[in-house]
Image (cartoon, rainbow, N blue to C red; front, side, top):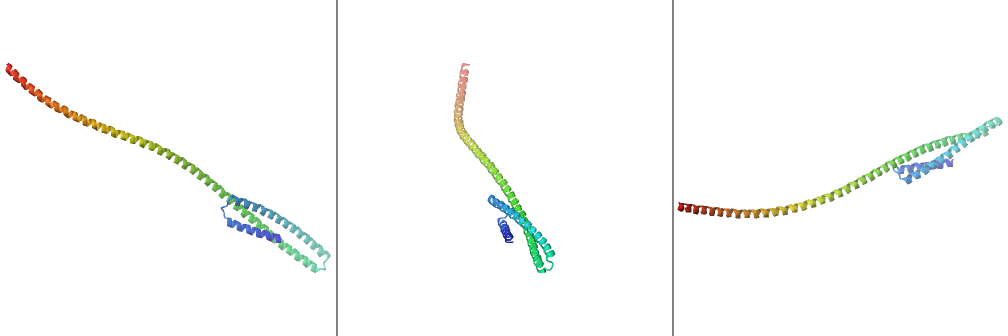
Length: 213
């Protein structure tokens, strides 16, 4: 009886521990729960053996009761005491059966908690894997962006050099255009002067021709 009470107290404490732990546990908690399950199984096996032994005792006492009733038909007090003991043993047997059922239910509940913890651990491992893959993909994207930035910087530098060269070429072309404009003005002035000289020469030639006539 004291052993059964201790088992019941231990199961109650274990169920309270499960309620505190919840569904999210670590690997250490899973190992501890597994140890507790093994211990619970051992206690259940021991309790079942005690129940079977108690049943055998009851059967022996019932057999003894039959023998006592046949041999001591006149001793009603001994029979009543024996019947009382049988009733107590029967009550103890019923209580033990109840405890065994409670232990079985507690074992099922504990196994369910362990399965839930295993599922949570699997989901956590999957999430960690997803995060690792996301980290790797992000790192690749960062490296690509760094390469792209370097390429853009080189392109910007090349465009800047091309712009500076184009500005210098434009300035040089503007200078040449101004020089050619000035030269053209000089040539135009020279042509105008030359045309005046030609007109003067023609006038002189005409005058000479008239004199010759």
